[in-house]
Length: 143
Image (cartoon, rainbow, N blue to C red; front, side, top):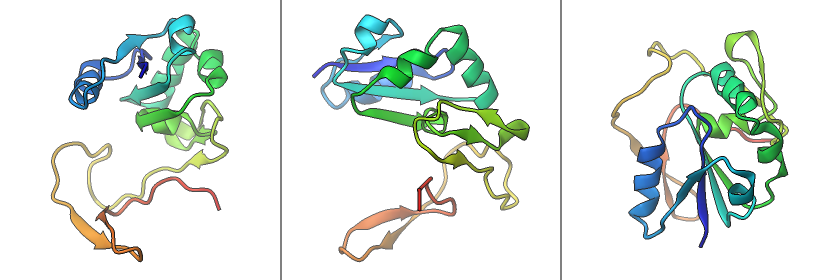
């Protein structure tokens, strides 16, 4: 399987590459359209602010490339947010618009934002008898 990690300039590429490699794949890190468009699976990682990431996407001429991708794309952290239409961060940031949803500002639960580090999590039962990690922030979803 041809796995590619998109080099957006705003991600911890080595961590993502190592995580994928632990599952037996040899991912390529690239922003070359010929490599990216031929990927079977594409990872879009990101860290930092939405504005800084979108600046990098435009500077590296990745905007149209990302929108042209038809293969499965996994956005990780900020990379997932970038797939949305608009972020409430920094008084509003236009994103890629691949997912027709806005990215809301995280609810302030009295924790520093962004909140990073190791945390204790619990598990919640769901109707099909499975278990999912339980947290305070729901995922982006369309109604």
